Length: 282
Image (cartoon, rainbow, N blue to C red):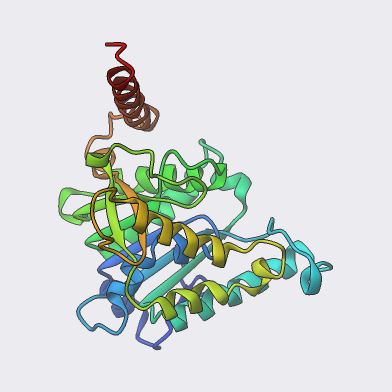
């Protein structure tokens, strides 16, 4: 893949070295998804020399809502604006590298299109991250789900020595507080709330365009932190949930639909059992 126009390196490091130093990598559909779903690894890598964050944005941002200052912007205008905003976030968050792949949503959602999968596989092989963060397969946004499906397909092409240690499916267009407790992965977003707000605030085209994602993302993290424990004081100031997608990478024969259906079925059974037990219906 020609990275020339698709790779941004905030600190100016040489391309190969910048990508190879990656330890935490997030693949998202849209500009700003990364900052909302993967703030925990961003903050973990911030200011460190042993940890480096890499963001990969698959989509081009053309379908963004717009109003006010941005009301008359064309799709081409929005692509450029959203790319600039994402690069600003990479500077603020001190990312090691940022890929802007610029694909239309129609291509990302096409199950027969292999181009995005091939690009992601090449990035994974070059970056060799320890941890990968994706959209979760219960997300209700088709472009998010399409991005996750292609990323999982790319991970499955890797040899065992090229694979990350763990793969996480994160919240954006659906909370994951419905997961059974033993299936929840807790991503601590407590550190540097000022950094979290700065990253969210960079995406002015969305905030002024009529979507207060900045407030919504902070509210979700705060709510998760408080409601994560009913009989204990808060352990976190901010918390995102994730599900472990590592089994999907390791077992190419495991259908994504079956994987998420098992999680839903487990939740359904647990809710039913509790309701029946406390209602004396067992």
